[in-house]
Length: 135
Image 1 (cartoon, helix red, strand yellow):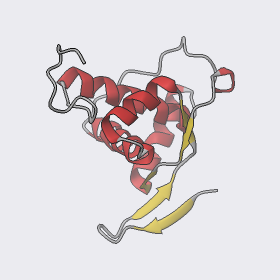
Image 2 (tube, rainbow, N blue to C red):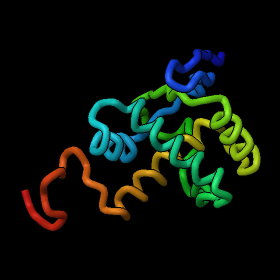
Image 3 (cartoon, one colour):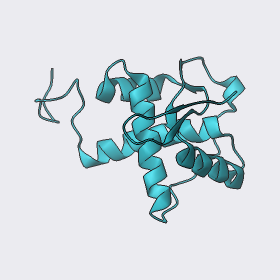
């Protein structure tokens, strides 16, 4: 069931897209950058990934070596809230890539975290520490 509400800030429809389950790696990365607000971290990743798609670039596809969702360990369930336009982008790309929207959202989170790391973005935990420092 898709639930919609109108954003007071933009006047656009916001959609509760899907429930995604983040595994331990994604949870650790999101928590590192967003604290316990997993929904905010997933939303930031979805917005970033959608922006990449709108720019005409195709992000790397989800790796084929990952196990099927039902064979993965349980993690944190998150229900990201995005606008209808981004939802449609994810639905089209999921169809094109032969995957589900939920799997594509998890992939978007991992890609986003990798890009944050590549850019040297400070995490909440590491803010103020040198990258090479111990402790």
